Length: 415
Image (cartoon, rainbow, N blue to C red; front, side, top):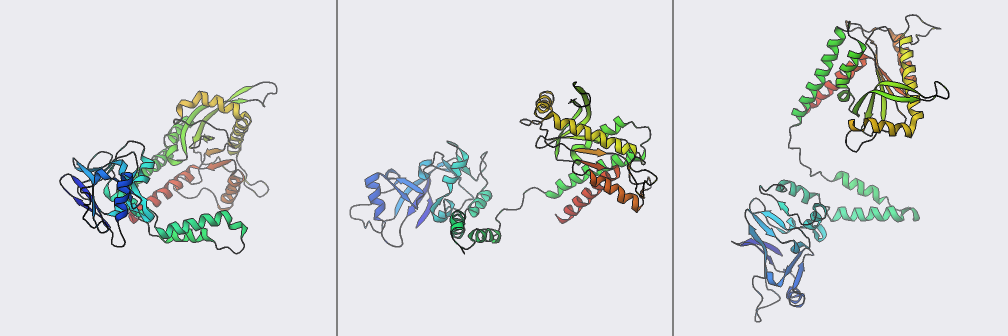
């Protein structure tokens, strides 16, 4: 049985046995100068508060060891006690001292595991106000997360099953049993200490501002140039499409195909780089309401206007030349635009895609600009190019923002 007692100098570890004999402790101390208790605590003969006398019953003797010394508002335990290079500091208040604070199931040393991830020589501090200390409530969560005997058995069986299962017919699915056990085990992760409703409200305010700005511009779009629309959308593009992390403007690429035997330059107005470094193309046009579909049918179909077809063709050529440029192009783009990327990131040309923002499918009063046949044909056109580009109207953009805002507001209420 292990117990702890506090005195004016620090902590005393007391050990006695309820069953059997504890004379092995004294034998180890006399023979080796140290003894390991519960496979975790390694204590030296010099740590003994008092050695057993020759006339004492060695079998029932209670061993007391100097376990920790007082160090300000903490108790300092030498790392050698846990066979680690880190001293352990425990706050002298707010922590209940008991065996399970140090020893997990199957005599796993808690602080030895911590030392493996913290690093050599750095004190492991639990509780108190010292900078870098582990709050005691967090430490308690850590103790609860250590696997118990049942989980260890399931895990061991699952590993055995994975290795030799294919050699035996009718073997139980022990991996599934392990996963089932984990899914049933109660989570010990505490609720976050921050207030998610504040974060959600900040997100709502952000997207409301973006939506209202675009709506305001759409209400007075006359007189604004295409360049002005591009700059306005680019102000928000990384927020609306968070997969992208960088915007590149006036990107020069090489064209080896338009004129055989010569190399000419093309310029992509805007390119986007996603979080993995992949380069995509974006085309932002003015929000005219008649640039998507022809007003009359061709063989009973509404076909794309020249504006839409031309924009699609322009984007397709950019993608074609980028793909053909390949590794050489990647090197040149990284040399020119590397400073605009997050540290450690580089541009990759891997199956680039295009994003087209143009036109409207709603009238100024909010009613639909297309009947059901036009809407169907427009969707067919979008689907035709879905593997290489997304065609988005300004009204699609507003609907996307409305849906994001509605979702955030529901989550804010639920929180």
